[in-house]
Structures are given as structure tokens and as C-alpha cells.
Image (cartoon, rainbow, N blue to C red; front, side):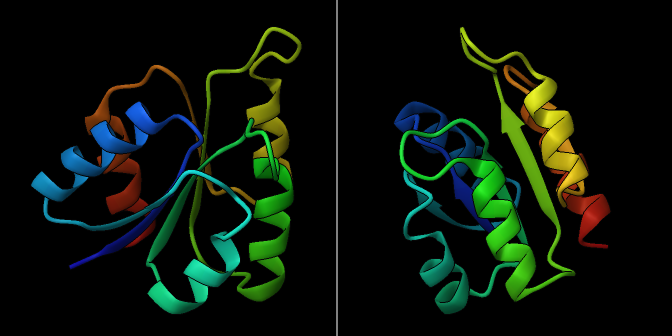
Length: 121
């Protein structure tokens, strides 16, 4: 069973994606903050990380950089809907600094599953 670490500050997104991924056979741990992501990464040992980019405490870009310094090979998918001050070019930045793929919110859950399966094959 593939293990997914899912990080998003939107509790509704976390809940919906966790339930969907679990129905598809994944083991999912969630965090609503990037602050505890490194500790959770080390204890949970996921096969892939799915992280929001725009979060109030630690931005996803910083999180990706930190995770990459620990494990250069862990697949990371960046997700974001942008914000009023930032458009989705933030997702391009995420890929440039180490995300393997990115998805713009809202996206189809099946698209996320396809990326997870492709990146963890």
C-alpha cells in the first residue's frame, strides 16, 4: 500500500482528498500545517508528498526545499489554487525548486491518483 503525506491548510480539502485516496487504496496521513511536515515525514516515511503551496505558516516552496535537503528522491506533487496576490505561476516555481508535478485547484481527484501512481511506480 502506497503511503501519501498530504499537507494543506484547508481542512475541507484535506478531508475530501484523504477520503478519496483511502478509497483508492492509499494509506494517507494529513497535516494542516507545513510546520510539522518534516517530523511527520520522518515518522510516517511516505512514498510521496502532496503539498499545498500557499499556506499561512510555512509556504510550500520552503517545505519542498527542506524535504529535498533530507531526501532528494521522494516524489512531491505541489497543489495550489493561487491567491489574490499570486497567480498559479507559483506552481511553476514549485517545479523549478523540486516538485515532480503540480496541479492547479480545483482538480479532478482521479488526476491526482494518476500522478501518484506514475511518480511512485
